[in-house]
Image (cartoon, rainbow over all chains, first blue to last red; front, side):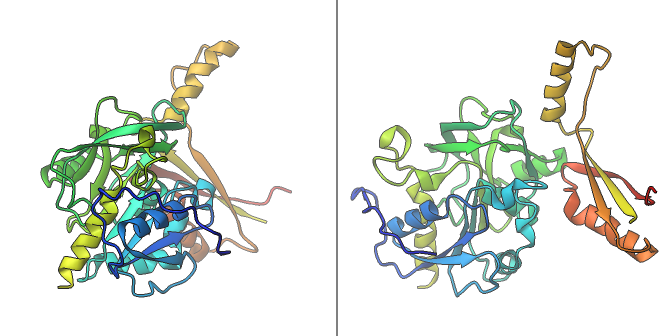
Length: 252
Length: 85
């Protein structure tokens, strides 16, 4: 990938980040991925070293965590995330996420769709109930702060980050939904209007161990003043600082 | 060359937003006899040579693991279509 000059970080110094933490976060790129650069930028702002991971490679390069970013991998052909699931890099990520080491994995938007197709997370996404592409600043309630990616949020905190997709309606059978609710695995719920018909207003979920989190909205687009919701919102940064904090504490 | 046709439909309990949009549009063209539409997918797998039991089994496995997602879809048919001369 050609190295281009990056716009200087507009870091809000009041946000607690972990400069030069030494934590390595891998960001996966598939053909059709859009948000890998923003995800990498968010991880760097939070204090991580970013390792680009190419879908066709099969080495995780000793990363401490992985982000599967948004976009339209393989043009969403077949089903969103359906073809990406079979990439060599996904095999490695699935194994590492299920291993004793419990590699932290965050799937955003198309990344969430890939995680459900990979069976790391239950359920699936179908077209928004109104069939329109949606792009808006979305309020979410954080309902589980015990995952690797949400430890720095307050329980039931309401945050605002962008939502932009066409296939965002979360569906699962009643048994799966009951289990997710009973086990507290709904991490984010749409607050106010349900934007896409998702069951139980679900915006994001986690696996049993809390290391794998997937959500449709985009925290990586809300980490810098000037770019996030209302040009000031930075609610998304805590995803990235939360995982760094967890990894620093775990390595002590 | 023979083809194996795989038909995939959204599960009955899953709302099909595309089918809903189509059923809403049909009356505008005067097609008033249809009270529901569900939209599925048809895959045609071309086989070089004869369709053996083993190849058919491969098609069934591909249908179940990749061509459909069992959370939201059912494979409703895997059929062999002979070459039409």
